[in-house]
Amino acid sequence: MVDFLASRADPTAGLGAVRLVGADIFLPHVVLNHPLTAQDAEVVVASFEAFPPVAAPVVPEQRVMAWHDWSTARLLATLTGDAAVAAPDDPAAVLGPVEQWARWSVAVAQLSCLAHPGATGPVVDAVSAQPQALCRGVLRAVLRRDFTIACRLTRWVAMVHATGVRLPVDPVVLIDHVALRVGSESRPLLDLAVARHLVGAA
Image 1: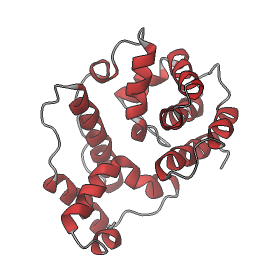
Image 2 (image 1 turned 120 degrees about the vertical axis):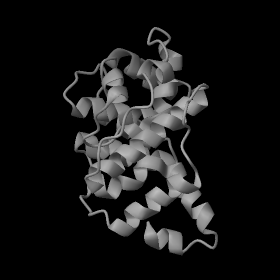
Image 3 (image 1 turned 30 degrees about the vertical axis):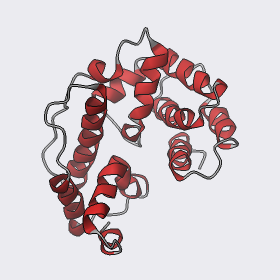
Image 4 (image 1 turned 45 degrees about the horizontal axis):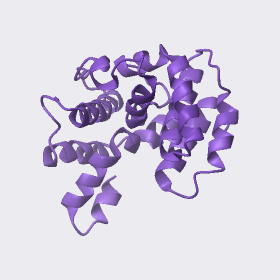
């Protein structure tokens, strides 16, 4: 992260990029066990100082961002040995009622950065408790050819599968199917790479 920031002509824009990537910036440390240096941790802290998190989320976009920020702050705390970070809200407030599974699954997709190896927390518990709705959502996205949403939900499917929850969809087949259709966009490819790691298909 330090090297990335040093390579930016505008350091503030670089900090904005760190905030935008969010918890996924820690994937090399979570997946590959690379140590997090103190300097890299300071970059993440500086990104929060430059772009403060939402203090009291109200509208859906703010709630999504609050959970993104929580995931980043929580992983930072885990990797640095700091105190735990309190959850920003009730997961139901950001996900909505599972009975409206199509809308619920879109909200789950917006929180894909919370689906990573070893992930825990209120949103993870809420999504893991609804495998039927999750699989309905990802199949709907595939049928609608919305492969951005499909990749994000595939990442969740893989994570829920990795926790031992039985699913009505084979995550390996799903990953292979979606991978043939996403093209070369970096974000969907990142989601699929995490999904492959989670199911041991990397």
